[in-house]
Image (tube, rainbow, N blue to C red; front, side, top):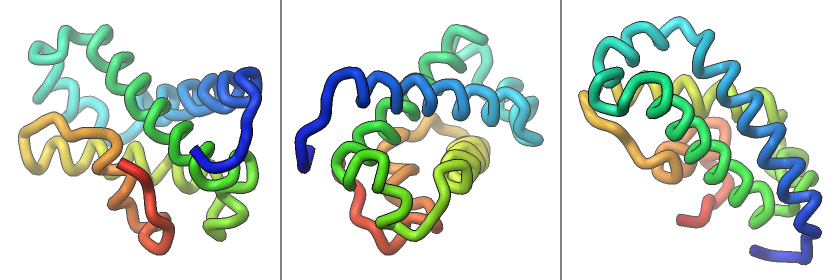
Length: 120
């Protein structure tokens, strides 16, 4: 991470990220197709939540590595736009490839962050 962050700030960002990602994930138009494809493989809802947690961890790490609460302003994009694109790409690409993708890889490749380098 670059800069110094308090544990409370990181926890708050992670909590916001997990809430937004989970809400977007479970209400997304591709959710049913994703669940039909991967539900049994990932142990149903438990696996969905584990995936959302992994996505929130990846996003929080990106935020902390890119200026904390200023990460989105620095990247010229809104937080909700990143969340929506991240979930969309995760669901869409998982369905297309018929494989579970690494959240950090998907985050690194989403279009709205193409100009910002995301750590692995």
